[in-house]
Image (cartoon, rainbow, N blue to C red; front, side, top):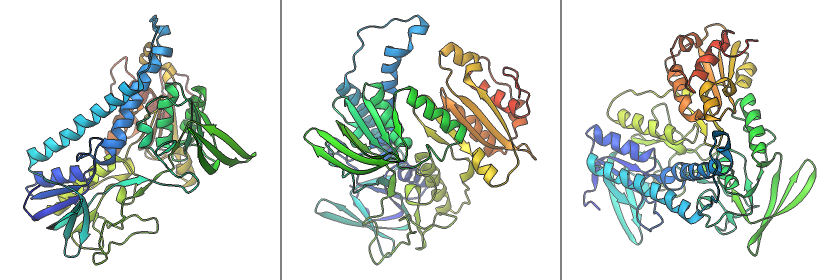
Amino acid sequence: MSSETKFDVIVIGGGPGGYVAAIRCAQLGLKTACVDDFTGKDSKASLGGTCLNVGCIPSKALLESSHQYEKLTHGLDNHGIKVTGVKIDVPAMIKNKDDVVGRLTGGIAGLFKANKVTSFHGRGKLLAGKQVEISSGKKTNTLSADSIILATGSRPIDIPSAPVDNKNIVDSTGALDFDKTPKKLGVIGAGVIGLELGSVWSRLGSEVILLEAQDEFLPAADKKIASEANRQFKKQGLDIKMSARVTKATPKGKKVIVQYEDSKGEHSIELDKLIVSVGRRPNTDNLFAPEAPIELDERGFVEVDDIWQTNIPGVYAIGDLVRGPMLAHKASEEGVAVAEVINGEEPEINYDVIPNVIYTHPEIAWVGQTEQHLKSAGVAIKIGTFPFSASGRAQAMGDTTGMVKMISSAETDEILGVHIIGPQASELLAEAVLAMEYSASTEDLALTIHSHPTLSEALHEAALAVDKRAIHIPNR
């Protein structure tokens, strides 16, 4: 720990918003400190926040491991590959996940050293006069800075009907560390996290039941894409129950008894494990002292202005603490932007083109507006779709589920939304994000030559289909 106490910038939080903000501040020549209290499995400090330690990265490692297992057991016959005797070693899979996390979190520590960011391990609290108190065990230390960035992220929402005990009833963190595959697994919430975690254990042999209180499946996604996703997940064996409100979850020995209500009445099911995944809330508890009151909105998010500044001049907030989607890449971009604001620059973030991804199989990814939103707003639109079943590359891969849907303005042809369900949707979406960042039209994409055969040709054909010019499907 450094003995220095005065900095140009102090960042509270070492997640994808905080560590990126700290590095960018240091790149700009600002004397920077980062305060973070996350502790890894080895009880040592571990940078990277929820995303790298117990969120984005470990869940993707498990999704990839389970996908490889599923391919070996179900997906290679058409390629003429016969595989027998395949077994899953869950502890080894968990160790691989932990190794991936360790390499990446260690990498951040290396980046801090290379960029001369001073790292403090402990819980940071904002005091008056732009001071930060760091608590670590019984020790406290106080730092001060000209500017402070709050980047403490979020945590899972608890629900009274299903109290997490980290044994039979777990949150999204606990679901990453099962020592064996549950025979019967319940998930409260059929959103992004619930679908991803449910998919992991379903592929490994669990009977998975998702209990979603909302009436509509994936309401933020385009309805056509959500409908196809629902169909595919049910085909995979996920039992998705909509309008199902959990009223009570009770541990019983090594089991969990879950009671829920839906349109058909009251039900009770017995499970081996239950995952509670109903959303996240900002980490603002004990973040600031009474003499440094930060304004919060009615949902507990930090109020900020157009340059991410709070009601206290020189104190900024980013990522899951503030308005907008709770996404790691959104937090990182805000971290860069705030660093540049502090340096006297005028950065911009286009919140209209933030990509969204669900890393199931098929993957689901979108950017921009949905058809239902644009129609409800009275915007005249054109739509083009292209199925992966008509893609030569997808056919060769044996992975033809899904489609690309492109929406443009009927007046200007500017692309307003791109929605994909299918192979490598998360990677394909980057082209759409870039196109929309430059206010491209579907004609611009249609005039862009794509390599053949590639999955990206599906975007090219969808752009052509907007004006009924697609080559490899009938135009209707």
